[in-house]
Each structure stands twice: as C-alpha cells, then as structure tokens.
Length: 521
Ligand code: XMP
Image (tube, rainbow, N blue to C red):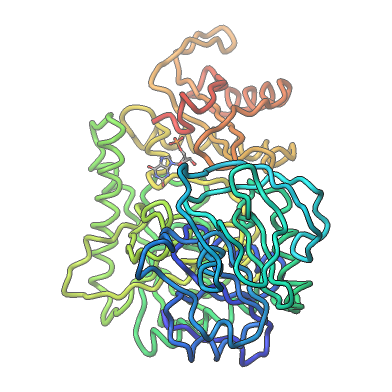
C-alpha cells in the first residue's frame, strides 16, 4: 500500500526504522498507545521519504542480522543529519555502536529471555526506573566497546553494555526490548524517549489513523470495485466499515449464512451493516447446501474441510455474478501476519483461513486490500467503535470459522443445530446478565453425541446432553477452565433443561488447555 504521510496535519511523528525485527510493529504500537503517531519505514527507504516524514524522533528496531558481517543493514546518514533524538534497540543499538566507532562481538551464547538490568548512572532514558529492572533480551551479538563519546548506563550479567547514551547528543541505545510486555516498565521507558526526550505531542487519535487509511484505500482503489467476505467477526466487520467510509457503494460485501452461526447472528449482521450502516451486503442463504455437503460426516477434520470448501464455492459463485470487481478486501490483522511469516518484512501474503477465497478464478486477477494488516486486535476494536460498529459486536468472544459445525459433536443436522443454538443463547444471555461475559475469554455450549435419561413429571425422557465450556486465557494457546459460581451454573442448567424439551442433562467442562483444546472438535 502506498505510503502517505499524515504530516499535512502537522502531527508529531516518531519514525520507526525497520531492520526486520518481529517486534517492529510492536514498537510502533507502543508509541501509538501513548497517543503519539508513529510510522514504520524500511531501513533502506529513499531518503526523501524520511525527510518528508519530518520525524520528532527515530527508533531503530532490532533485526535478524549480525553487524559483524559485511553487507548487513546500516543506518542511513540522513538519520544523523536530521539532528533529532535517536533510540537504537537491539540490532539498532549494535549498528549504531559499530557506525559510531564502537565494537560489536558475537557472544558465545545467544541470550534469550529474562535478564536483570543493573543501572549504574542516571539517564533520561530510564527516568522513574529502580536501580534493578527485569528486562527481556533476545540477541546473539552485543556491544563490547563503547563508541566515541558514549557513556555506559546499565549492564546485565551477560551484556556489560546493555544501555548506553551519547555524552552530548540525544542518542540512546538499549540491548533489551522495552516494547515487549515481558520487560517491566517497558512503556515507561518508551514514553521517556518519545515524550520527554523527543518532546512529541500526544495529539494522535484513532480518527487520524482512520483518515489515513481512508486516503490510502482511495488512492489504491480509485474507481475500482471491491469485494469483501463479511463474517460478522471483528476483523471483517471493521474492514467493511472502513472501506465503506472510504469508497461507499463501490464496496460489495458477501455474507454467507452457512446455518452454523449463533442464534440471531444472521439478523444482527444484516441489521447492523445493511440497514443501520447502509452497506452493500449480499446475503447468501446457503444453509441447505452446507447441510447437504455435511450429511453423514462425523469426522471433525472432514467437517472443517467441507465447511471451508463450501464457503469458498459459494463465495466464488457470488463474486462471479458481480461485474468488474478489481479488488478483494480482507480483514487480515497483524497477529495473522506474524503467525504465518515470522516477520512483517517477509512479504508473505496470507489468505485468512475462514475467508479463504483462494479458489476465485485466476482470470479475475483480484488485488488484495488489507487495511488492518499492521494493527493489533485491541486497536482494531477501538477503530470499530469509532466507525460506529456496536460494542456488543466488537467485544464478542471469538467464534471459529466452522461455527457450530465443530460444536455439534458427530454428524450435523438441522434439528441438532437448533437445539445447540438455543442452549448456547441461554448460556451467553445469562453470562451477560450476571456480568460474567467479559470476565471469561470464551464461552459456549456443545452438543454431545450421547443421549441420557431424564425424568419429567412421571415420564422418563431419553434426550440430548449439552456441555458448557467457559475458559480464561490471554493468548488462546493455553487456557484455564473458568471457575463460574455453582449457583450460576445451576441456574443456566435449569433454564436449558426446562426450556429445551430435547435436552435432559447439562454438564460443565472442567478441563484446561493443555491437554484439552478449547473447542471440543
Ligand atoms: P482450540 O480449540 O484449538 O482453539 O484450543 C483455540 C482458539 O481457536 C478457535 N478455533 C478456530 N477458529 N477455525 C477458526 O477460525 C477453526 O477451525 C478453529 N478451531 C478453533 C477457538 O474457538 C479458540 O478461540
């Protein structure tokens, strides 16, 4: 996407010069978190772009290379000529040291993980930090000799020069990573640099970013038409709202109802986007096709594949009906990019699995538009709020692409889907009422493939079993089952067996991940 500077609005900007670290986006994000605008440019970008940005300060990122080798990235002269504060982090520190007359060596052992920083001398960079600080290291090389006119500020047991600063110029360098949450007070350290040392204004707001993205989208799309697969999830919803603001009716969204969504979800998505926000949304009522393809299938991976494949076929068919589509928009966000490529610098183009439209005919030659590609989930949510998407929609628990298809254990039928939708709705409704919904990370009901005996009045009933699952997690890689109050569970269970005739029993899942995954299939 073409870089456009926001500096026409004279917003103070911190330039993050990228040397290829997986943390570069995180640095930019931390700067934005303090309401200062930041922009990332590759280290070898044309000088004129850097001048145009007119930065208030420059952060040199880490990177995978070793300055001890020839032909590795170096800081361009323009960075020094601008006479603004500079902060080198990890590789940024090493190349700074090397270029200013110091010496960098390859350490015998790579240091990766926690380390204790001992601060010897006061520094504006470490204002408000105690003499000892828990920091996060990830490096092979380190500075051995200080460059000319630099002084030592802090060390760790393995890195004798872990923080250094110039004696008279505002040039600082850190061997550790203040941008990762494993470093205590990392945000303080970044603020010391951007607010105190660079004196940058905290004037930047989410609407600046929205306006910038709108300009970029207009510039890229021009008069072309754009297609987007809308799922009702946070990322595709925010992408839709942003594109709509930029290009209005030139955006067409396709929303596929696969019959495996939560109760009321189809109506809610159509109401929000088509009726309230006036987006061009084509709803494809495809429940019967999905059911037909899923008939007699009980293997989870098979189900996933069929649901994914059917989605692509339906999406493609809708796309082909539309004329003159030139672009395909996707709600790819930064964590999707890292997961698949390891680094933003790698130009991997990822097609999100759920919206995998890789099956679109090649002759359509669609260009990708991914306006959220460098944002983190919480930033996407904030953008969504500004764009007028209802909060309930943005703060909803994650929902898997195959939907209820992987929560009906065994074969999927219409009847089972209705039962599960109803039970899930009761559980979620009660969580919200009891103010517990936001306290758990994900909660849902599962329909088990067994029947169990129950007694209703004098009558014995051989009926379905519903499992309830609620977990607490930060990253969804590991999770703890949520210790919901017994009274609450009792109330939900009563409502489910009383209101859903086909259910005779409710169980609560008390397994953590690992070994149990969050979903049952
Ligand atoms: P597990 O079950 O692997 O889930 O512990 C971790 C997170 O991923 C979601 N999930 C999926 N999301 N397609 C998706 O888009 C899938 O096939 C899928 N399987 C699991 C799950 O809901 C949880 O948030």
